[in-house]
Length: 350
Ligand code: SAH
Image 1 (cartoon, rainbow, N blue to C red):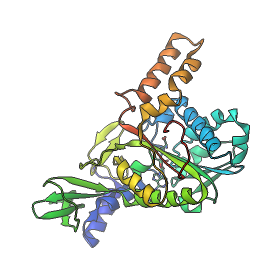
Image 2 (image 1 turned 180 degrees about the vertical axis):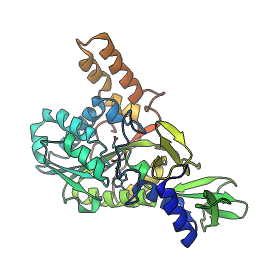
Image 3 (image 1 turned 120 degrees about the vertical axis):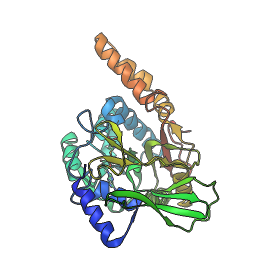
Image 4 (image 1 turned 30 degrees about the vertical axis):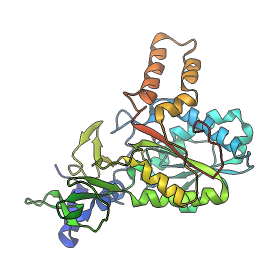
C-alpha cells in the first residue's frame, strides 16, 4: 500500500537523495499537507493509540495537584505561565484545572498556554477547555516570560531522532532512500561520530529535544519554575533502535504508511538530563510513572472515586490504576522526568 506522503517523499528522494530518519519522522508527523497529526485526532479507541489522560481523569487530576504543590514550593508567585506541550485532546489540562480548583489562588495566578501544531487537535483542545482563557503557540519561543510550569505527556517521543549504526569501518547514519522497486527503503551513509561502541550498535540522538530542554532549563534557572515530562523511554544510557510506528493500536512497519501511522522513538532521559544541566537547571532522579503517580496519591484518589459506585465502575477504576501505574501497563516503561530551577523542592521527586 502506498500513501500520498510516500509518493511525495519518493519524489523528494529521487531529486535530492536519501533523507535522514529525522527528516523522515518530521515529514511523517508534520508535513503541511499529509502530516500525521495535522488533520486527524489519533487518540482514543477509534484512533491509533490511547494515552494516559484518555485512560482516566485521575492522571490529569494528580498532575494538577502536582502543579499546585510545585507552585506553592515556588513561593506562590502571583503570576505563573501554565503551559502544556502537545496537549492532544486537552483532557489532561481540563482534568488538571478542575483538580487545581482546591487552590483558587493558583487558578487565579495561572495563565494557560498550549504549544500545539495540529489544527485538528487545537480544535479539540478549544472544546475541552471552553470557559478557560487559553493562548495557543506553534512552539515554545512565544511563551510569555516569567515563572513557568510546563507539562508534556507523550510529547518528546514525537520529536525527530537521528539514528547511527556502528559498522566495521566506523559510524554510519541510517537514512531512507529508494529500494530496487522504487519503494522507500533504509540505507546507510557515512557519518563522523567519535563515540565508541560495539559493531552493530545503534545510537539515537534527538537534537530537537535536547535543544528544547536546554533552552527551557536556561529559562527556569533565570525566571523560576519546573517542567514535567512523562513519556516512554530509558534512563540508562543505551544503544538500540527504538523507532516505532503504530496504526490502529498495532505496531506497523515504520516505512509502510508514512503520514498515516504514528511514528515515535523512546525518549533518552539521560541525554535530556545532560541538556538540562548544561542549561543551568536542576534534574532530580527520574521516577517510573507508577512510582510518580503512587507518590501523588493514586490509590487514595481511586478509592475516593470508587466510593459508593457499582461493581462495574469500581472494576473500571481499578483497571485504570493498573494500566496507568502497573508494571504490565505504563507504570514501568513510562518515566516521570522533571527539570527545575535550582533549589526548588519538587513534589514527588524529593
Ligand atoms: N499529550 C497528549 C497527546 C499526545 S500525542 C496526550 O497525552 O493525550 C502528541 C501531541 O504532540 C499531539 O497533540 C501532537 O499534535 C503534538 N505535537 C507533535 N509534534 C509537535 C511539535 N513539534 N510541536 C508541537 N506539538 C506537537
